[in-house]
Image (tube, rainbow, N blue to C red; front, side, top):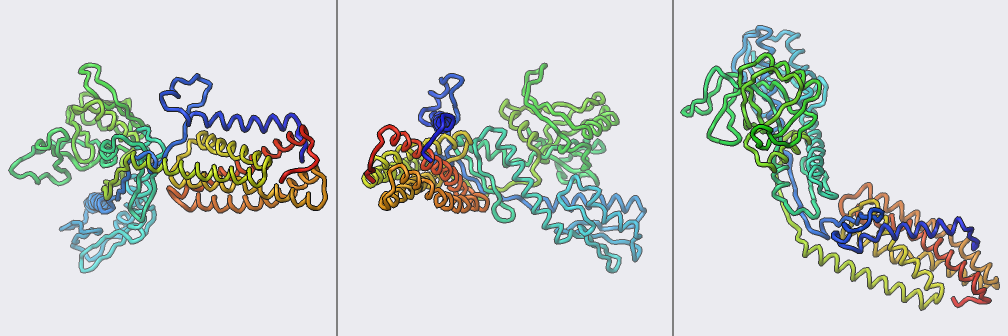
Amino acid sequence: MLHFSRSKIFLILASVFVAIFLALPNLFSDKQISNFPFFMPSQKVNLGLDLQGGSHLLLEVDIESIKKEKIEDLTFDIRRILKKNNINFDNLKSINNSISFGIKTPNLDSKVITEIKDLSQSNSQNTLVAQSSSNLELKIENNLVKISLSDESLKQITISAVNQSIEIVRRRIDELGTKEPTIQKQGTSRILIQLPGLDDPQRIKSLLGKTAKLTFKLVDQRTSYDPSNPKKAPVGSEVLSSDSNSEFKYIVKKKVMVGGENLVDAQAGFDPQTNEPIVNFRFDRLGAKKFGKVTKENIGKPFAIVLDNKVISAPVIRDAILGGSGQISGGFSAEEAADLAVLLRAGALPAPLIILEERSVGPDLGADSILAGKIAALIGFIAVIIFMVIVYRSFGFFADIALILNLLMVLGILSLLQATLTLPGIAGIILTIGMAVDANVLIFERIKEELRNGSSVINSIDSGYKRALSTILDANITTFIAASILFFMGSGPVKGFSVTLAIGIFTSVFTAFTVTRLMVAIYVSRTKPKELSL
């Protein structure tokens, strides 16, 4: 146990050196790190919201708007089916989560019923409902037909909308380069967002507050907007405001010619002729085909670009656009164009997000937390060092060196993983300080026991390390299992604690058993003591 080959010594020292090398950037400011040579590491441990300040947002997905949109889509499709099959109907309307209409005949044809029930499958690309025939419930009583979404369908809408919203929120935030954001589901329809170090929370709120649902619709040229009767529009059309001037209105057809779900890329740029900021977009193969067809068939007609139910612009189609790409202009500033490109790249939210709670954590609170954590860690560290030297003397000194190396290795690994350090994470490091010497205490007590039994110094040390190993592994494996459960079952600060605890377990076993054993072996081989002061 006390013999180390040169290769083993090299691996141990190399591991310690690499960990310390990775931890070095944490001792310098960002400005100093920028002047480091290329071979020096530059990654630092990310500080959580509670340590460096930032924004805390609690959002709620507007599920009712999704249900309303779903019902409106179904109403439009049901009218189309009834007309196609020459069904004499009247008073087609939607109320809450159901659609009703009257018919002149006592029963609907089975073919029509099948077509209506299959609507969720045929429109699955534009809905959040699971594809099954149980999505719609149809009842006919006294020539009155009532169609409603099933309970299972409504439940699936909620689950899918929240999951999709979380993914899109994550994409939008990642596009801005925010480090280590916390984005997680809370309850059935809420999303918790924590953004450490965010210095422009208003921009984030602006990005998250936009649904970014982009559609391309034809302008209805059969009529013009009448300010004296602002809500009136032909059947199949709707009145939408201009994004740049709320008083100016457009009458556009409700039918979506091309949807934003077919976008594959959007980049901010500048118009080469006017030099105004624009957004260049590109469709996928299906979107390019649709876009090319509609522009080819409607040359000379205005084509409205609609974002979140507001018309950004309505250019006249001059020629067929077959390449699947185009540009959006609307009097944007450079930042607005960049933000719109981010929104379109990330995808449209399935529903608006309502801000329920907003809190800003100031850097002063984070500084106080860091200071308190440093003081606690320093006090614990000094107390452990003094205790080990007093009780175990020179061997305690070896354990203290291993403890210092242990802390540096934890810091280096956290930097390498780009982990986020929170206040509970500091608590995990402080706990590691206390646990780090446990292994050495077990080893040293085993050595003392062997010495009392009359064994020689070499045999006592060798036997002490051998017999303590299984106990050390058992204790640390059980702690690691607990840390793993905390990581997978916990969230936020609990995960931060479990990460530092798990890393501390590995580094503690390595430094307390392997590194101290190397130092003891070197000490014994050089001094050849006849007795040990333990």
